[in-house]
Structure formats: structure tokens, C-alpha cells
Image 1 (spheres, rainbow, N blue to C red):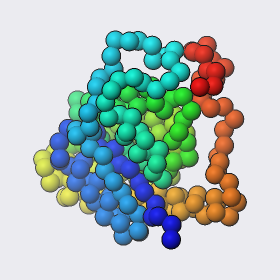
Image 2: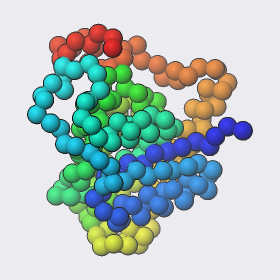
Image 3: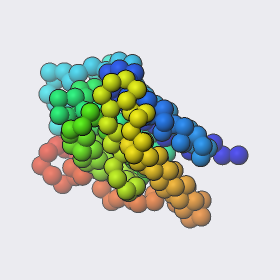
Length: 222
């Protein structure tokens, strides 16, 4: 029997609060479909900030900072789906999520886009304002990494301020449930396509990354 599909959710909050509660709800929805949804809480991840080396646009190998970012990226690569979830802080994404997408993107993902064709989802949590700003930012990041975003109606944006408030936003949680269900539908559809065709490259792209041919760096094979 094949292993159940897996979704990795990146939690960009600094605390075990409403974003974590929303992801527990998402995990319950996934479990009801026989899918494992694992949350990675960035607050527990050893993650250095970008250093002074300044060679990000020129290097051809993974970032050399010695922390846990590489292992988180590897867990994302091993999964069938990826969810970015973050709260609004100061009208933008929580700093942990911002640091992670910068470190992961520049240091690990830009070379050959290993998240290509993963099914992606985005969840934002806010008291009231700027949830759509985070949704847009993280959506663009998923598209940059050539992931597949499945429309699920209204965006998965949950309104919450104090601990426990997320559970009171019935509409927001309904949108999260729809998102997870649609992600699983697409994961299963892609799996069936691979089984029937024997092809792993569902949506193949000729270039290894979008920087090929641009005067940004030497894009010779690693």
C-alpha cells in the first residue's frame, strides 16, 4: 500500500497562537481525507538571518549558513503539498516568515526550483487589516517557485486578535477547509495522472530556473 499524501505547513508566527490553531484545524480536515498535514513552526527552527557575504546573486550552490533552513526545505521538497501560513504584524508578514522565504528562496530554491508542481496553499491571520497583502505576497512566492495553486473561492484569511479568536471566525475556517480539500483533490489528481502516464514531469519547464539567459549570474549547470 502506498504512503498517504503529505502536506507541510510552514507556520510563520512567533507564538503558539491563532495561526497554529488554524493549522490544527487544517490538519483535522486533511486527516479526515487520509492525508497527513505536518506543521513546521518557524519559532522552533534554528534560522540565522542573512549574513554579510553578499554573494547571493552570484553563488551556484546552496547557502553555507549552518542552521536548520536546509532541513526545512528538504521536508518541503519531500511533501506533496506546501502551505504558507502567517499572521499580519505591522501591516506585513510576521518577520519569521519573511526571513524564511528570503533565506529559503535565495539560498536553496532558486537554483533548480525543486518545489515545482507541488500543490500550494496560503493562509493569513489578521485582526482585520492587511490579510490580503500577505496572501498576495505568499501567493507570488508560491508562483515564483513554480508551485500549483488551486482556487478555492474566497481566500483563506482568518480574523483573530486574542488567543482563541480564530476558532470564532466560522467563515474564515470554512475557507481554510475548502483550501485544504481542494489541495488534496489536486494532489490526488496529479498522482493519478502520474500513475496512468508513468510521467513524473507533469508540467515540465525547459529552463532549470527563470534566471537562465538573464544577466544576473552564471547559470551553468551545478
